[in-house]
Length: 120
Image 1 (cartoon, rainbow, N blue to C red):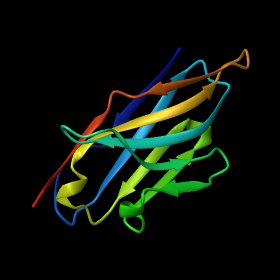
Image 2 (cartoon, rainbow, N blue to C red):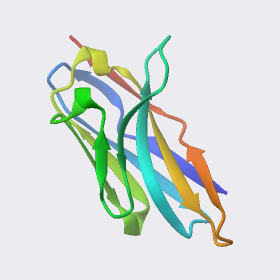
Image 3 (tube, rainbow, N blue to C red):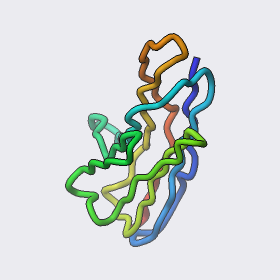
């Protein structure tokens, strides 16, 4: 079993910054792609950014230049540095990871989410 735990959310003024973390623990052989999603009330969950184990990244157009995704493979941890935050970025942010277990089986996991609130 694998657990993903997000942290770093909170209340910030527009234009401010936050750094989210997602730490994976449990029976992990390796983690392939790790992804940040966000979901605002009444809206669908959208991909924000993703990163492969090799460090290749992909971003939602609206966050390019503002957000930076990174990971520490040795710590099984992913980060999302969010700068110049806007009120429309307010949402619950979720971590998602594809994990290979010791038996070679891949399973995907979600974290419980961390709330980001941006005041105008």
